[in-house]
Amino acid sequence: MSAMAEGGARAEARFGHGFLTDIWYLAGLSADLRPGRPRRVDVLGEPIMLGRAPDGSLFALRDVCPHRAAPLSAGRFRTDASGVATIECPYHGWRFGADGACAAIPSLTADQAMDVGRIQVRRYPAAESQGLVFVWMGATPASAPDHPPPVFPGVVGGRPKLVDRMVFDAHIDQAVVGLMDPAHGPYVHRQWWWRTAGSEHDKQKRFEPAEAGFAMVRHTPSRNSRAYALLGGRPQTEITFRLPGLRWEHVTVGARQLLSLTCLTPIDEGRTQVTQIVWSDHPVFALLGPLVAAWARTFLRQDARMVELQNQGLRHDPALMWIDDADRQAKWYQALKREWAASRREGRPFVNPVEPATLRWRS
Image (cartoon, rainbow, N blue to C red; front, side, top):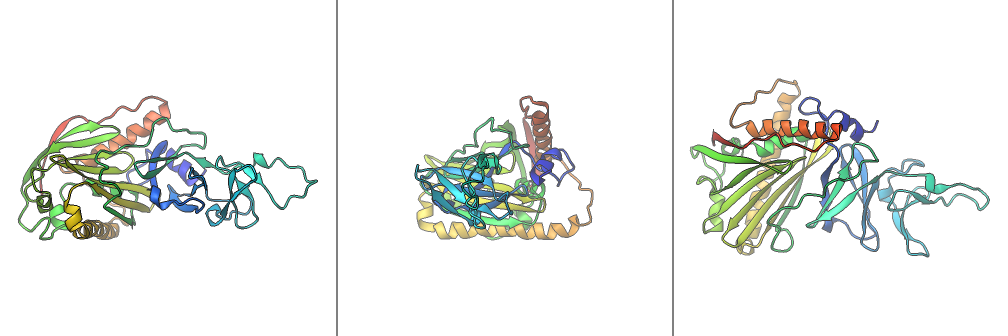
């Protein structure tokens, strides 16, 4: 059984193990892919070749040639006389189309009859949305998408103002609950421009279910989050989480918008790709763009450092304690995962287990 299929079978395993399947994962940005230049990514332990054919069309194949296991992403595109593009394996020149079917085996002689089209590499459904590339990780090769990739509010201002990437040495579950944790800010992200010692106070936020997740409903940001002051006016923000690991904050200041999107993509059981993207049409980015980008990168690296520290304890496989209300979002995440896996297994619609609630904590 492949790592990805095994992960689907173990989706309901204990926290920190297994993956959700039959769902879209971020694989990269559209700008990452150039026509004729394939690129490799690893998702759920599966090697995937992302390719953009010379005509600009996108496709994704398992990055393993069935002949001698060379990576197809190390090959090159070839276009035949009819204009059909294929990817050529760098080892023996076997060629595969966007559907995964073998199109040619150059070592065959004219009198060696062989239906090469019966040789297949796995094809992964891939789609582009808002300048992002998503791959559908089905529980089986036959699993086809039954819903489109997510669409995010606030993708404005042209190209992203910030794109930052890091690999966290953590299972996606640990990365997700760290991402949505509301109480670590005063300790992990303590600096003059965000939070300072002694600035903690009681907070109360309203949450509601959202598509495959939940949202902290639109509100005025907390007064001890100083960076919002750069936006001027009266900022309003809404923070949303969606399976499998998408978290975004949509800020409005009058007619201006800012979207901060964080996407978690599991590379394998012990590593998670974290991609941070910011769009905005707010003029502050024309004046302070490099400074804001530096602050965002600082945030991400502070979280990565905490993951490294946390791993020292996780090696001992401790029982983790979850409290309300500060850990309610982590509990919701686990309930959402269980329901997603159950709904796919039972062939029924997903029923969001999150109930509207007002949560209180101090940070």
